[in-house]
Image 1 (tube, rainbow, N blue to C red):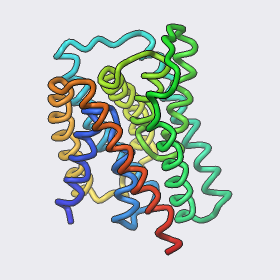
Image 2 (image 1 turned 90 degrees about the vertical axis):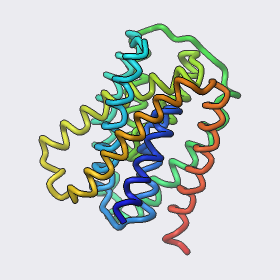
Image 3 (image 1 turned 135 degrees about the vertical axis):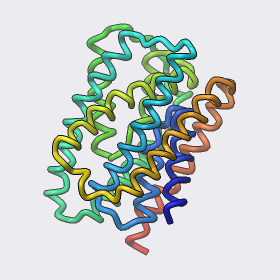
Length: 255
């Protein structure tokens, strides 16, 4: 069973660092399908795995010449604050529903619908926003959505960066991973302070972190070598498969 967790983390983070998907958008629905873990456990496993990928990937991209623009730092700071807001909104959502399985299903449906819109990103008009305040509020939006849905926010980041910052999919992927790195660092800091990690199976956690680091290394190398067109195709195919998985997770309690 542990080998399955490793490959989920590895494949998710290869795609995460290669196409900017982050990994959480793949890890969460996979764990929803394969495990009976609580939402808190799934989100924490996903966060540790994605952070390990984002850390190694960002470090390697900087060594390869990646320079962080000021507006990306503002987006990242906004996403940290948005993450806090998103977690708060989701806690209220859980209290109102009083049913965690129903909450998982609704998360899956919202994510499937959102990704169905994002897959048509090339049809959207393009802008080149330079205003730092606007960048900050984009970050709040990204962080809120990502935290509410329990994902790293990767595909949403990529689409927002291509639409509002006029980046190519390849450039957006690199910047998306940087944003995820800072937002997940903040998220995990809160998790450690609260002591929420104590209930985790440390062997599963370490297995997924190793998978995340391995995936981050391979994905970064592929991002450097592959063309923008190929990365965009990988992004779209991945999104389509994730949509199908989330539709299954939404319908499975009803079947």
